[in-house]
Length: 302
Image (cartoon, rainbow, N blue to C red; front, side, top):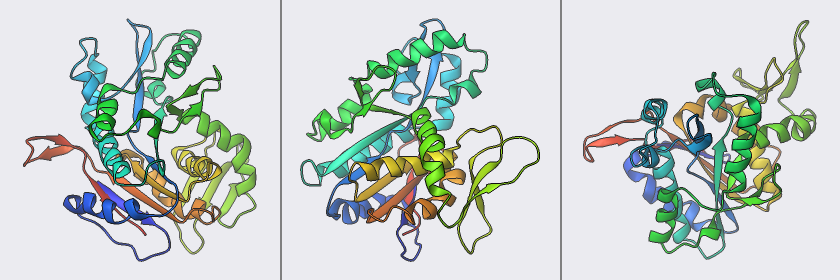
């Protein structure tokens, strides 16, 4: 993994072998509440079972119902969800009780890209509502990581599922995107670096460009959809609303291109946040020592 520590300090890179030590020296010692985003996973829809399941290597390897699509895509994801969750649990176990909350963000919209021929919207809507409303049980590998470190399950932050009104351990990425488009976008428009791109045809895009830099990030695209860039911003907005002073985000490698350019922008308007570290996943590859595929980690910008 690669880690970026975002808070107006010189940029530095931490080697994968030093990540655990760096986390225990840094975030483990931060005063105040620490929220840790970890375990991020896709949902995939199983046609035969008419249900959504997490795309996790630990499930694919042990579940006889796993589909060929799950086997294909879990090779791209690697063990990032399980490994990042285990690191987050270890970190939480080193901090004062009740000072750390783990956040489990679920990508509940990408399945439409990888499963374009999935069944009708009514069935999908019902299946998704069932997944989130029954989310009192964490994936087995996640529950095991907590219990092995003596952590109660309530170390995981709960969120209200809008379709059922029930509390869930799973935070919907689709929900964050809606909140960004309907609430946060208009607030950010008054801040430096945020702008609407004029277009003669189609919906104007909402952009962020860090002052003094050429690189821009698209937050709302030409079809009116909030992007991954917007999702990462909205996540920090939601955490700040819950009193977060510090945040540690484990982000998959395939999200880095969209997430990295936006961090300075949201940090410039969320002044209550003292520290934010972003730990980037790397492309899964062979770990010669372990003899298996891993998604490793590293820090990036402080």
